[in-house]
Length: 150
Image 1: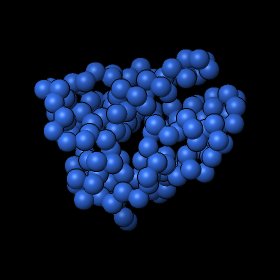
Image 2: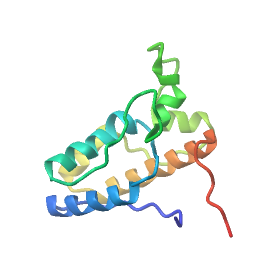
Image 3: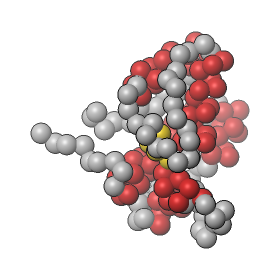
Image 4: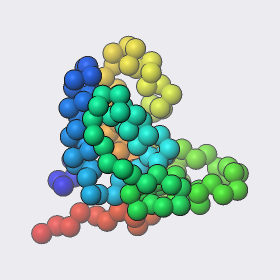
């Protein structure tokens, strides 16, 4: 609510379980907005929740029903109906195209190596950057409103 991005690392499955419980509690009764969230993030969170016996909500992940989950990738590619990529389709590419500054050079493909190296600071910086870009892009597209100031 205060606009601060909360990102945590989990040293073990107990910490992961606790953070999954917190995530699903915060996400309850809200529409989840993300980039490739329908096809990657939410399925990953659901699978980890299953493995760690964490209850999770039944979410509609259908490409054409965004009532529970709104995927900005689907919005920006028109649900990828033609299977043609006229430009790069990454979060960073779309952010740049819409005039949103991108400062993080880390890519998702590098996360495994960063985990192996124990470079949690770089992982947290990347996660925060991705969330900031996603929020900025969602606001630029008009699917997420600026927080109200009282």
